[in-house]
Length: 175
Image 1 (tube, one colour):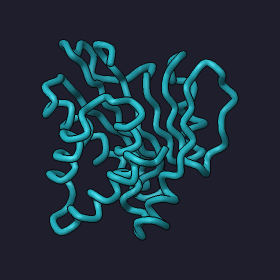
Image 2 (cartoon, rainbow, N blue to C red; image 1 turned 180 degrees about the horizontal axis):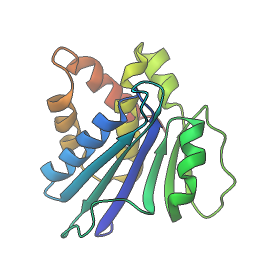
Image 3 (cartoon, helix red, strand yellow; image 1 turned 60 degrees about the horizontal axis):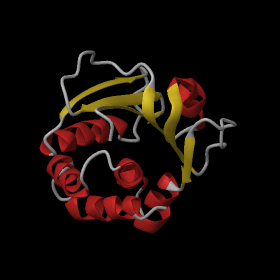
């Protein structure tokens, strides 16, 4: 990882991306890095646009907002269309299988079945955010797998730890 990495997690409300951003930022802190997390979502709590932004750095973070991201996760076509131009050259795009692969040859694209895995393999689409965190971890190595798992288990609702750990492991092995 370079000294500072900017990530944007995007999709629609109800997909748990705000929680995913909080978990990722917490995992970075557990890893001994500096991190900041911000979020925004449309007025429709479920179904509206949603994004979480995380900056992870080995040094001081001077500005709390992501402008041009190094890593972009998109769980909906709408979010991919909206944020694709904000992904830096040589950046990493992680998109769900149901999203059209964009025509950009200056980025690294990972087209993975995040929502499908959550729904079909785990049996609950609500853990797609945790599957996505596993995929982000595997692809970027931005935080250690153990610290991310610890942050997940600390933040998910009591009684859901086992299914969320399963979702995380699916994400780690999604490629």
